[in-house]
Amino acid sequence: MADDPMRLLIETMAKALVDKPESVEVSEVEGEQTTVIELRVAKEDLGKVIGKQGRTARALRTILSAASTKLRKRSVLEILE
Image (tube, rainbow, N blue to C red; front, side, top):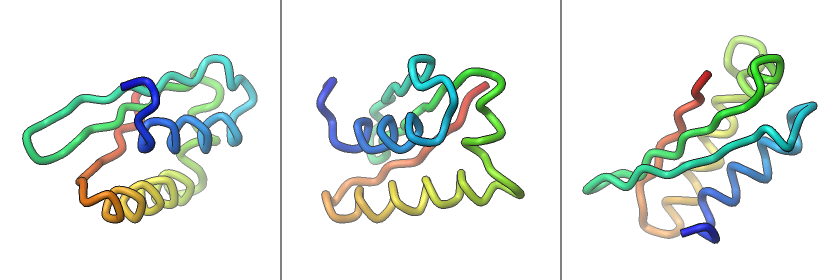
């Protein structure tokens, strides 16, 4: 589970975006058809992960979607406070 490619992908991208990479937490919730990937960052880094008008968050979701399609899975990204 720890080396799941989708979780690793989101973790790597999030750590590159934030000021406090040690506070990045990524967890997975397996559903019947969809995997929910939950991303938690430090409160002061939340804006960096979401971006102006949600552009960065949308980009993260697009990359995740493309990668999961390649693996024939369905994944969604939840950014939690």
